[in-house]
Image (cartoon, rainbow, N blue to C red; front, side, top):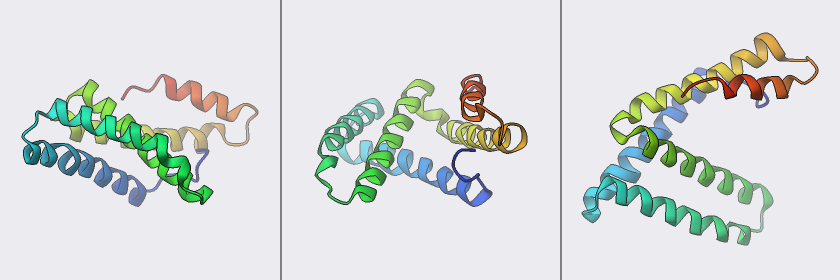
Length: 130
């Protein structure tokens, strides 16, 4: 795919990241603060959105972009979590791994080197269900 390809270690790392976002970032924090899961997700989203406004203060471009992208990824994951339900977070993480694997598979097996390869990849991924 347009990255560098995905391997098992990368997918396992994302799986662990998703697990940490849910178990540490939501479940443990909601218990610690005496909040509902929904309240905690909303608070986390609000905090991250406020933080994103301050990220331009980071002078190193690469660190700024990594921080922005990681925060954006976590926000998007939490929004998907709200949509799919926290009880299904393991399935959501697995589905995302499958999505990334499919992205890699489609690019390297069918599209690499073709004109409009990235357009075709995006159109294909738009049809893949999470």
